[in-house]
Each structure stands twice: as structure tokens, then as C-alpha cells.
Image 1 (cartoon, rainbow over the protein chains, first blue to last red):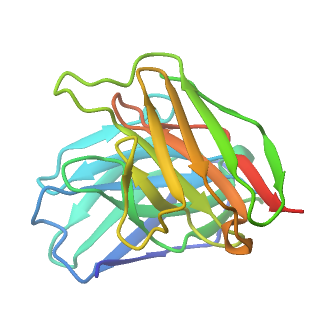
Image 2 (tube, chains in turn purple, yellow; image 1 turned 180 degrees about the horizontal axis):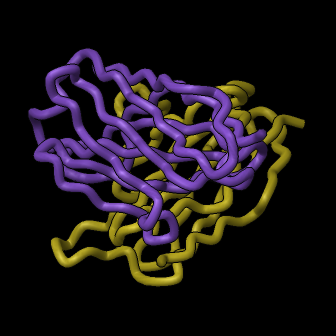
Length: 120
Length: 112
């Protein structure tokens, strides 16, 4: 069964770049008709889809964040990553990585999530 | 973006009683391939969301049959036939018919 694990700094200063990695086990990130997403959830609030990368490396982003977001695959490490630039306090959230259900972006498997706080 | 509106915001249910959650989308979720990409998740405290129902009504393996999904177009419903203590948490609907994916605001279910 596929498992996902987020990693990265838990504290980022305002205006800097948030960088997270999702390590995938139990399956190859570059095979199959899967899409790999990042989703975030501010404390006590709802879920926001950030964007996704397909197994072939094609990316799609939420327009609300597109100017600041990069999602990429590292097939050699079976990982995918998120970079979010020019962060502010409003970017403070639990960040989840997820794998889509077959042939779709809707998440079927999720990582446990990692809290990222933006503060000086 | 497609706006997903869930009601009610919260629900307090006696064990063994039914519960129903509504999810309405601002546009039809019927895709050009004939499928409707509406999903239901349950997020328990301190955990990531877990997928319960895919494409309106397809229950995932291992999900109890007391959970059922229905609907079409813009109106969808998740029903729990007999609520159990383990069903507490926040339920979210999600559409992936159109990017960006958008979630409903969530419905908190608690036990009386």
C-alpha cells in the first residue's frame, strides 16, 4: 500500500520560500496514471488544494497561488516537492501531500501532514 | 472556481440514528466523459482526511455500508444510516470535475 510522508522546515520567515518534500513508498511515483497533489489546511479551517504534478511531470496549480508555487517530481528519490515563495502569516497551515485516485486528481492517499508556521 | 456549499455546519446525532449531509456545487459536476467527480471525506481529529466515497456513490473498500452517497448535477448527499461513535469528525465534499479542486466547508458530526 502506498504511503506518503511530508518533510521540511516547520518554521519559515515572512517573505522567504517554504519548501517541502513528500517521500512516497509502496509504489513508483513515475508509473501509473496517478497525480500527486499538495493541499493545505490552516488551523481550525477547511482544505485548500494547492496544485498537482502528474506522473509524467505535468503540473497544474490553483490560480490563487500560481504566481508563487512550484511543484516538481524527483523520480530518482521517489519524491515530489512543493515550493511556495514570498510567504506571509496567511500561509501558516498544515500541509498535506496526497496521491490521486486512479486517473483523477482527487486524493485517495494522504500523508499525515506537516505544520508550517510563518513567523519572524 | 466551483464553489462547494455544505449544510449543515454541524450535526449532533444519537448513536443508531441516521444523519444526512448536503453538498451543493455552483456548477454542474457532470464531466464531458459522463462521470461526476464528487467525493466525500471524513477527517478525524488530528488525522488527514480519509476518502469514503468516490464519484458520488462508490464506497471505498473497507468503508462500512452504513455510508452512502447520492446525487447528480449540483446537488449531492452523504447519508449515514446508523451513526456510530467512530463516525465523529468533519466531513468534506470535494469536486475534481474542474480545476482547481475545491472542497466544501465541512460538516462537523458529533455524538449526543
